[in-house]
Amino acid sequence: MTMTPSGSSVARRRVRQPKGPGDQIRVREMLSYLAAALPGHIGAAARPLAVQCALRMDSEGQVRLRTGVMRSLRLGREPLPWSELEQSRWLRRTPNATGAADGVVTAQLLDGVLFAQSPARPDRRSAADWALRMASGGCTAAGDPSLRLTVLCLAAHTDARAGRGCAELERIARDRGLAPAELITVLARLTTCLIDWHVAANSGDLHWKLLPEASVSADRRSMWRQGEPGKQRKNGHLTLDGIDLPLE
Image (cartoon, rainbow, N blue to C red; front, top):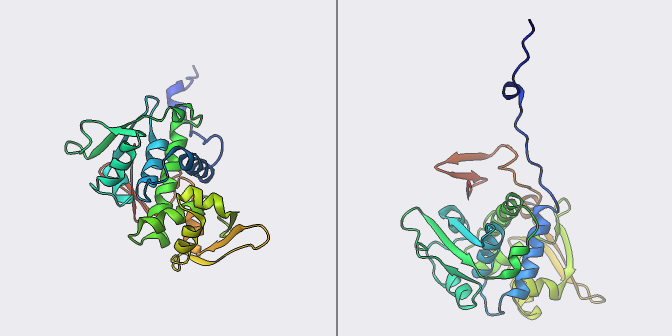
């Protein structure tokens, strides 16, 4: 009598394929949305925090940020970015926001538009991880949140393979939360991240070329989920290229 293997013995775990646009496009769209949704006075440290909250929220609008995310954002227990978002009535921290019990900061998002996000949560988390890598790794390792946010905005519009990008100067400035003249001043300080940049006289478009470190990082898509090398798992966190990411 021939024995037929049971379904459980031959089943293979199906690997979920990301749907819709890639991580870079999701972050680009989120930066654009937040530029319109957040008041202009929101600082450079609070905007990447808002990106993480928006992309990691669950179906109830709740978000849990582990210490690895806060460390990658270089916020620690800095209260100002949270206070800016709360005062704008964009979110509110929940009672255990200090994270004293389990190292997790929790918040309730109050922006109703975000509840209509169509990408599945795993895909949104993947985009959030991409944003973390761009905002905290490579040539953006400097402690200035203004520089890190600017590089994130540029990376979201960069052809990763060529390392070159082009976008309307006013759009990058708006996503960055700055006036165009202020953005020019910040770009002049990005000597460790940009090979060159200029504003086209005929169109007003901003053209730039990122250093290889930044453009290569922009081309990585959820490497920790795809089992690629250069990662370590420890205590519920994953370290990818020296950047601490939470395992959710």
